[in-house]
Length: 197
Image (cartoon, rainbow, N blue to C red):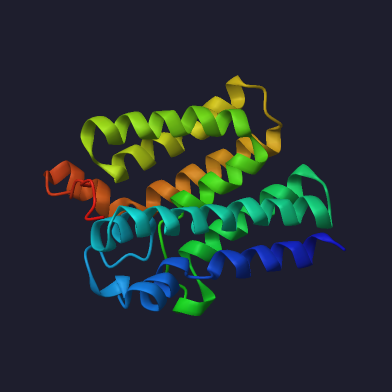
């Protein structure tokens, strides 16, 4: 069916504010009014508890995963699959439904690389998990894991398009975490807890 429809659909899919919709629909909470005011899984975990946080993480993950699948079905080339993934992350971070605001893009980005590079995904997820487990800083784990995506992709012999995607995604995710990085340096960043339920 072509690359352009797949890319546009990926952006729209990425733009769906899963955390905002689920928070309001199932828990009567607007995540933008609590905690970090972010609609992503980490703020949902802190605000609503472990279960809601995991659900919202999975929904955001699927936005990235399905977007790459759309690229595969519509065009079937690595370049289009990567572009669909990038636009899904951009949609999540700059949602057309939220006046071009949104989340940090970590869960959606993980969904993208899970579809593109499953082995790389396993490596960076373990890096993320280890850092978060030790430090309890999700933002630190997310930034470090994002930086390792293009490195792991290169070491594992991934296609050039996927390595470039890893570089672009890492830059986007680190930039979106600018305020978190400042708080980490100042020692004021919030640590994630076990959750209320």
